[in-house]
Length: 555
Ligand SMILES: O=P(O)(O)OC[C@H]1O[C@](O)(CO)[C@@H](O)[C@@H]1O
Image 1: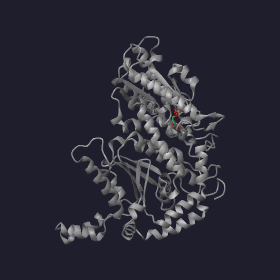
Image 2: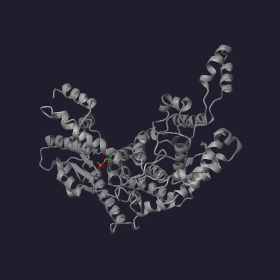
Image 3: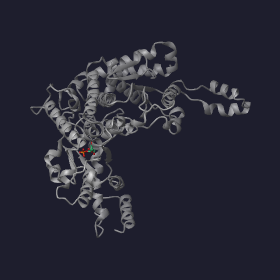
Image 4: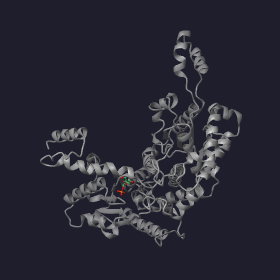
């Protein structure tokens, strides 16, 4: 593939993959396993404390080789180098996407506009360390001199989903001193419910917004400020109780945040890639700075693996190319994320933003309409709960749904046989997806149950499970700051690689702007008194719904 605007479908590897797809259509995974006793160990990768078993895929060595050839033809190596070197890979905004610099060890040099960003990153980590120590150690207190017991993090999108996931996932590492709450939604219920639970004298508010312009965040921050000021009439209450993380220093200061409570963000960090920056502050307050640094170290170890490992043994590359394989050559339109760990309950939400905001695009980097499908629908939820809900469709529905099963080998809460049970559930799902159940097996089962011949004929087809449904199993010894960091970085790189194949700018998000623009027009029409005249700039559905709202709220 030449340059950046050719289609991946024009590559030699793509043509070869079409043949592989044809060939493998008549060779189910069960047969691939039967023919190769070493398949499980050959299709396994260990990296940065994670183990990926990708043997339960519609894949053999020929297809794998051509998937890697596709990555090469799409210039993955040079695009990866550009990412890490701080080149403006976000080409529509002419910015680097240097989330990897946020977890790079000290002493390296990556320059953006002449400044070594690694120095700024480490200076900020030190500032975070001082702040975390001061808050958890009781040196920094509320306006009445009481110690902080609660942190309310106010932010949305990338300023919320990563920190929330990490705070929940690392619950076993919480110091116990600080409870963390997240207010993201403009639905007032969320902030009201949080404020009902906390004490104004002992609550610290963190306003998390790269732009400091996001309406949901600013409205929630104003509500919190008003709530605080009413309950703590001391003039310096806001200075004591508010800190902020933002690239928009002036706006944060104008809001009332003191300079020493203000943490930097940089234009070269995308919101959905920002957990590793001071946006991770609520996480650091919950688990302590040493653990936060372990999170960064796990991510850095995954970065090194991504840079160094040969493509066919490179975990993010293999996962990404399998995604491309199903998305573009087998017609899958979604990808399920199935964590078998209660602490990872927010992983699907986090990955939805990471993946769908990055690769939900319809033009190439050069602005040319794509002629192939880009990012799939990411969805999922906790195992084993999903088995009693949507797994029915995975097993017997008509869609192809590749899935990632994610499970730690050792639980933080070993009680009775629960973890073995959970593990058995996880393995049984991927096995059922792969092996399925034939009509013959279904009939045999019914006969063994003593069913009548009529029942056997009537029910057997309902019990058939076609199988040959692909899945990855991603494991770690235990869910720790390190392994969580490695896993989150793994998915960041998987997303990046897919963006390279589809020739997308994975670091912009223009698609979310239209709704924001229209919302600005609708809000005054909901509230204005008297009702504004219809400018003709709307549609009858929206107009009628606005009228309903006004009537219901007596406006
Ligand atoms: O951190 P900010 O600037 O408030 O943005 C929040 C989120 O809004 C978005 O820009 C989308 O509207 C996300 O990309 C981002 O993570």
